Image (tube, rainbow, N blue to C red; front, side, top):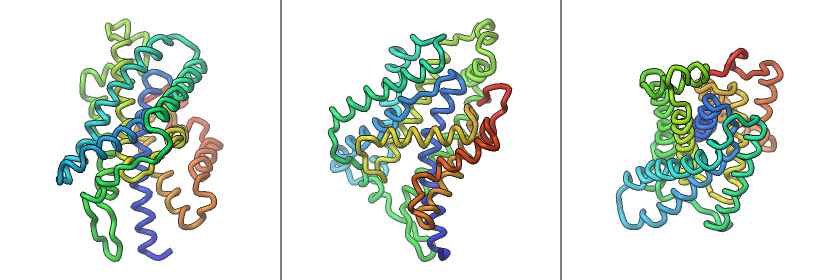
Length: 301
């Protein structure tokens, strides 16, 4: 590989890692606080992408602005995330409190299948994309290569901002500290007057918004077809397992590691590109069964 290809592979990897991290961040937050491996998270990603692509298809022709279509992606993530998160938390998650974790996993898998069929009913099997957003933001020249502004700045920048904001929120805000308290010991936190049901609701909605945001930001660069949610949730589980369940900073590092190595494998060994994230996960778990950053004695975020 020459220097230009190395740079392209690196930038592709970081852009992909940004999307992967946003979805994984929602997964790991929900698990860290609620102890739920939420398979339905893949459906949140898919709905975010489809909703964003639908809005862009309708809205973009009405404006020449480059910024407004971009901002609409974030608006979609917030609205769809709040709706989906609230419905699933109230109808399913809240009613499974105290259930066996395996049963919760199976219930979220059932919810994913329902959402998947509903998605096909609403949007059909034809591919959707919101590529208009990328075109309007233009490109950036970097030596001998040209790279899209969207993939170079928007996706990685959003992922980094989400990480910083969430860490600050958990460490320095009242609600964030209550979430951390529930994570460490829910019984003691409840005895101290913290409303565990309220905390669980906010946690699940925040995690859902992050998953939907990942899908919304993927829509300008991804062809959305049935099954896209399943692909992303499996990859996100690989990131979370590699990092260690409940590890936010670990998820960021694992997403970058998997994203960059996967990107380079496309150029060096394309036949194993799909398997690369899982190879990394297996190698890590062989030597570190709790993940790269997991503390074995307790769940942490």
